[in-house]
Image 1 (cartoon, rainbow, N blue to C red):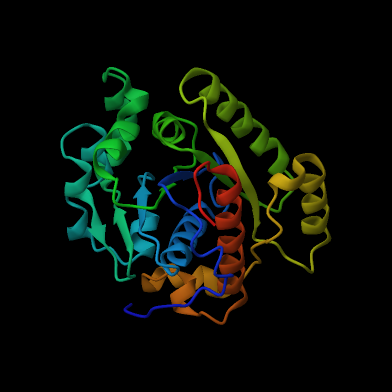
Image 2 (cartoon, one colour):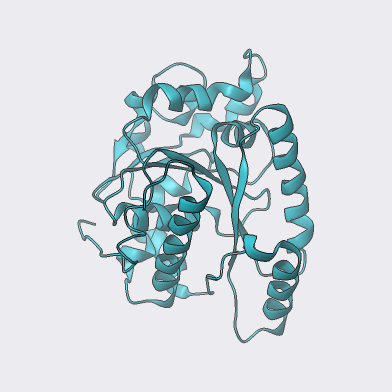
Length: 280
């Protein structure tokens, strides 16, 4: 997994972010492409010479697996960082992708929801850890678990903005409405600067009339918050994690890889608009 890739986005996009940005990739519904989006977006952003840190906040640890992180490299992980048992720097693991590192998940993380209940200001654990140890990174991408519990709350409190992967299916809008209410509550109570970076439609099947109807509904309701780029159903995207690679490295020419490159261009351009102090 030593390949490098070239992200074919305009030069002005490739140098957008002048200060660190933290994005939470979140949806309380499982199986919508959160981890795939996190890993491939991180890879694409690292390919334009940004230093990127992925925080694997899902006890399943799929982001860690997708980036080729072996179990023995996860002895110090997000659990120890959240519970104050280790500084962030001690848990950062470089990946085979230049410029991209990860704080992996471990089996202990499943217990963190319960243990954090006893911690004072428990919603700030991740925010404080990142403030103390992530200053060298241009982007921090947080892969959230499929729930709206304390782990996701920590991600939303720490983040500047939220990206929502949304599967093109019938119940999509109902699920995102719950997350939107949570984002609003977090904004009012803990993190007034939190914004919705955007919604990305995933697993879109162009041959399926339902996908087309869902996309129309989502765009009609959320307007420009929905990225122009959609992520197609693509077997190469599904295969890539079993090889410990993002699809961008597994099959750069695939439709899935090209879609994530296009999404990265949109995200970086939107970051230029959202983040004050960004130089073009």
